Amino acid sequence: MNIQIVLAGVGGQGILFAAKIFSELGIQLGLEVMGSETHGMSQRGGSVMAHVKLGAYRSPMIREGSGDFLYSFEEMETYRNLKLLRRGGACFVNLAHAERFDPKIWDHLKAKDITVKTCDASGVALKMGSARSANIALIGYSAGTGLLPFSYKDLKSILKTVSRNSDLKNNLMAFETGFQAGKKS
Image 1 (cartoon, rainbow, N blue to C red):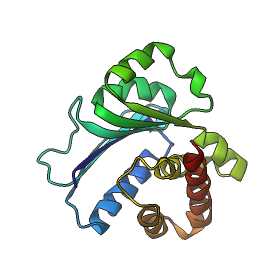
Image 2: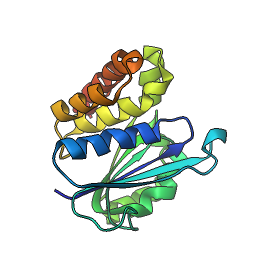
Image 3: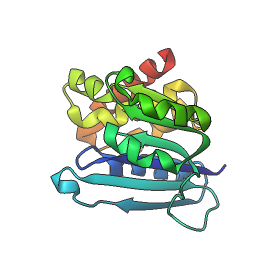
Image 4: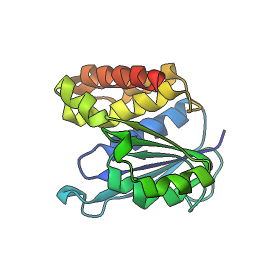
């Protein structure tokens, strides 16, 4: 299995924690794991990006047009990073209203056969009283869509391993809520 995952957002959205989830998952599955992070002005709400490669790769950076999955925790970061997805890739966007997704981009997505799934992961997390869990809700959502090559069980197991005890309950609830929403999409 060779999988390339781009995680993009702004400071404070848990991009690096999400990258840790996928990295640990790769290790659990016996895959080689390689990654790269870009922080920029993350403490001031600037862009944060992580690349995670699972499988046999030589470089940690994901080249334009070669990523399998893009997780975008902020709408504008979606537009900045879509170029990294390969033909037939999938993008999961934290966006409350899919119709808000820039209509100009749909032709490009159709031409590249890129699947875009939107989920109000921030809304899910806020309803739970844990705004910090939006990243986990989006990962759960992606698992529920059936587009990932990873199982629900494996992702949930890793989440239990990497979460702090104080965050575990909220993380599991966010994951499960997102997963159920993904199954309905």
